[in-house]
Amino acid sequence: MKHSFISIMVLLSAIILNSCENGTNDKQETKSSTKFTGAKGEVKLITLDPGHFHAALVQKNMYDQINSEVFVYAPKGNDVDEHVKRVLDYNARMEKPTTWFEKVYRGSDYLEKMVSEKKGNVVVVSGNNRFKADYIKKSVEAGFNVLADKPMVITPEQFPLLEEAFRKAQENRVLLYDIMTERFSITTILQRELAMIPEIFGKLEPGTADQPAIEMISVHYFYKNVSGNVLVRPGWFFDVKQQGEGIVDVTTHLVDLVQWECFPDQALQKSDVQILSAKHWPTVFSKEKFKEVTHLEQFPSYLAPAIKDENLNVFANGEIVYKLKGAVAKVSAIWNYKANEGAGDTHYSIMRGSLSTLEIRQGTDEKYDPTLYIIADKAADLVKFSTNLDRIIKGLPQAGLTIENVNKNTWKVVVPVELKVGHEAHFAQVTAKYLEYLKIGKLPEWEVPNMITKYYTTTSALKVAKETK
Image (cartoon, rainbow, N blue to C red; front, side, top):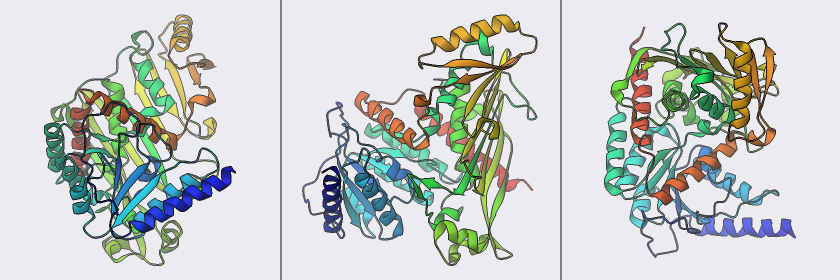
């Protein structure tokens, strides 16, 4: 019976998709509303030109506040087809199937059509980053709220567009917000919370370029599984003019975490940032590896400038060393081809305080499971420190946390499995948080200035990296 129901839902979805191939049947305009009450189905999603799998991950779960009817506007092509397939797969799965009804408009005038029809009130933007800043600006100008995948901008030249978009969002009283999933990792949450407890962490060290106050390294892989399937990446994902370099892409998460953990709930400004150094370097692809992850037989012509000795050079890797309000931070993004068996994307983070160091490791010793270590200063009273740490860990709002002594001055936090929800589940958590903000009618006071500061940091670093010989 359950399988039959799922089959019917998929069939209905397919009928709706086909009926909207060249235009929407429903002629009634739905005006965007910036007044939300939390009522069931009041949030009406529009997905604009989806080209990244993150667009579908927003819909991996259902939400009471979000209407099950979703409008998609995109040019004809494989990007939108793959997005629709992912959503239909969520509808068809056996465990907790979704019930989305996708109404898809495919046409060259997709952006104008979205603005004129105004079928929804929240636009999800996750795709080709070359167009994202323009999509965001035009959406907020038209009175849409926007939930955008990172990065919002990928060049210094685009940055003023983003600043203008935030000004227009405030003027139109709509919420522009980016999807920062890494804030919802339990080890990151605990690192942040412990850094705010003086009797454990002390004060954040100012740091140096050789030993930063905070350092983060994010390692990603081009070949990966998403929702149980091997991900097919579009060819443009390998073009830095369309996807952006790694120094402005994945580092967005890291710069965000530096701000969020070192200066919690504080509004930061561009003047708080000083780039000390930045560099970038390529990941090299053979034609065979490129085919394996894109299913394309040849390198597209737009990749010709990046081909050297018959291999594709993608500047997916980057490092930024900078000062934020006087504290030295270092963030690095690394893209490799394929992870070792049992491994996946990894996150390393270290915060140095006057009383202890908080370090997240995710290596072979941790079986690739993110693990938080607390390393007390060698001059500390270790008996007192251990007693305080045990009491504080047990008093945190996350239930079931314990500590395990690793050596005389190092402990690791043991986290219950139910608190380890995984990267894909973080998209539901970000979306739920955004829905809360819509109901309240505003973002926290520090969010907008910090988003502006974050993208100022990444785009300024790109400029420095390109100028550095």
